[in-house]
Every structure is written in C-alpha cells, then in structure tokens.
Length: 209
Image (cartoon, one colour):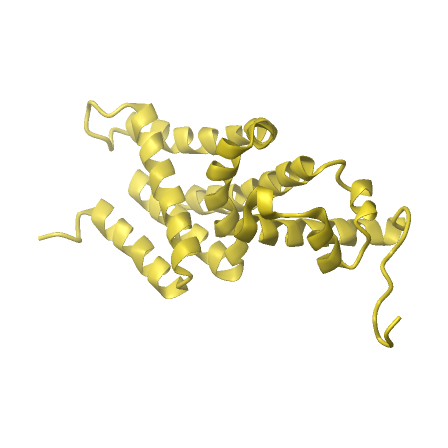
C-alpha cells in the first residue's frame, strides 16, 4: 500500500461511523446520479469516492435502485422543507411563490448537484421502470405542496375565475422545475437568481409596460 493511502474498510461498518458513511454515500451517489444518470452510475465508483469496498455498500443499500430512492427522498425533503418554510412566512400567492423561488435558488447555489439530480429524475424514470416505481411513493409531498398553494390562492380570491386548482398547481410545478433545470444547465448562480427575480416581477405585473 502506498504511504498515506487510507485502507478501504472491510466487513460490517462500526456503529460510530455508520451514519457518517451513509451520509457520504448519499452525497456521492447524488453527485453521480446528477451528472451520469442512473444507468451511468456504478456502485464501484461511489464506493471508491467514499473509500469503502463495493461490497460494503450493501450494508447500507441492498441495490442501486434503493440508493436512488433514498437520494430522491432526501432531495425532496431538503427542497420542500426549505420552500414550505419560506412560503409560510409570506402572505398572498405571488409572495409565497417568490419566496419558493428564492429558497430554491439559495439551495442550488450551495449544492449544484441537487438541481442536477432533480432534472435527471424524469429521464431516469422514463428509461428505467424500477426507478419510476421506487420514486413514486415520495412524489406525494411535492404534489401536496403545489396543490396547497393553489387551493389557498383560489380560496382567497386572488385568482381570476376559470383557473382550476390542478392547473394552478401545475403552473407552480412548471416554474419550480423549470428554475431547477435552468440552474443545472446554465451553472450560473447570478443568472438563475436574476431569472427568479424576473418571474416575481412578471407575477406582480411590474415587468412589462
């Protein structure tokens, strides 16, 4: 072994390091899924990045698809916890939507792989039925959040008649996922933040003459 190299850990992980190792696995898996997709990601590459054997991964995740599902659930929790908290501080649909945009931008600025992962989920789920099945149970939170925003806006009379709750919820989904896609593709934090601010101005009616 080359001097200074850390040996890979063998066998069952110690309880004291299990939580830390799982967190590192999740982080490296998210980065890999975000850049290479489900098909391009391998357990070997993730294990090498963390510094454990490929076999040791199975102490944490029985399969790659279960690892993907865990990463998806974590990303959903991070994103929607932030947006729920931001929206709760505001009054009115536009202000809540703008707060969600700002929260999303802040998160993607600190961790670009979050946006990249979100963008890749759709294609991964379309290409791999096992991925679609694995992530499906975790999609309820997103749908519930978008519908709650839409329902409140309609109930308060902020929305012109004729726009259904489902359509308004879909609009929020399009804006949120579109902004995430912009962040992932452009890799320009200032530009993405400017887009979010422009969306707010458009919603407020202060963008166009």
